Image (cartoon, rainbow, N blue to C red; front, side, top):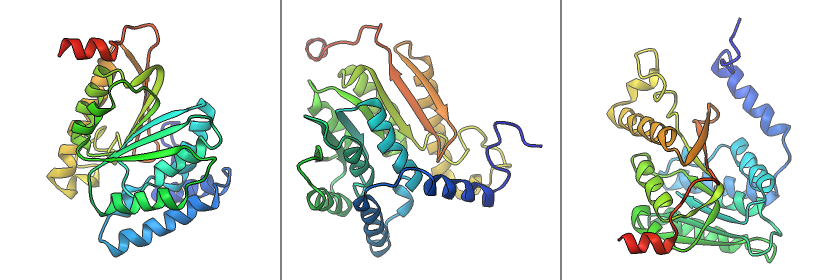
Length: 257
């Protein structure tokens, strides 16, 4: 008998469950699936990792979550081919003054994403702005803006620093939600023993798991935040900024500098 925390008895059932979830969740707009197919081909042609895109079921979740939360302003750290950004845009379709800012390094994936944003642009969709450069350098340029939803899916060692910058610059509106992706790193964050076969993939993934563990603990200790970690996909940490704590304004942050 499997405990309630054991979601699937084996990998085959896990795949079947995710496929079932995709098939029986609300169908996404055709251009979302089209862009995923185009992104997959682009990644294969350019020796990029398709796995860097969110799972199709996670894409559906992001669209649903954005609509459910009534989000108007999204900040994404980690754009890749623009798949998740287009999902956020679909979730905010028709919302007045909606805006998405996505950050990533300059390169061919950013060029591909920017072309997709232009290709699928419609009057009903929010504006998507791609800012290139290291996120630790581009985040401070957003001082004065606030976002209802922030999605972090970038270099794993940078998560803690990104959180500090976001909170110090008051980029997340009180009551807003930050979602950190890949937070369990294929189970290594919870179990780095020899029982986890991912341990055999080498020191880089082990190091990433360590920094993600430190990020999770940092979130848990911060009295300004409340969070829940869900063991879905590669692990999602949902972080909410409490409304009843003082968050410095952009002017206060500037003055302290």
